[in-house]
Length: 158
Image 1: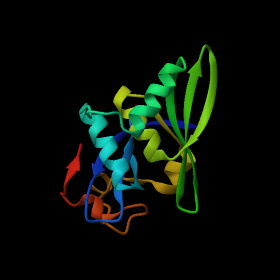
Image 2: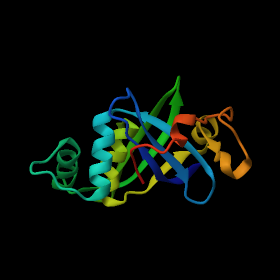
Image 3: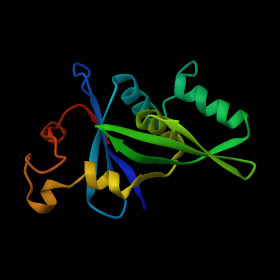
């Protein structure tokens, strides 16, 4: 079953190897982090803020290609977690024909945030990767899926 989620947090630490985007159920308290690259984190931040670069960047280009082909991005699905790697797909519609395109979650999110594209995650992925927010259940950093680095107040975009 696909569960609707939103980006609840974007943690950017330029000196760290990984950045994190946290997805949370829109009608629940489960959430989970996904480690992403610095470039993808900056792309998500830029597109969430509505900033327009002087020349199209990769996600802007892909958005233009999709639009030029008469297609629309209908939704983003994060459908699998295999050996610590999340798998996503872009669900596109072109003249009533729906098709899926394999994608990294970070690229899918960077593409979709500018147009408020709905994001869905398979319930089994949330169960495997997620947790209930520790402040809601009195959890600690030992709670499954909890990364204490994500609770630090650091350079983040919300």
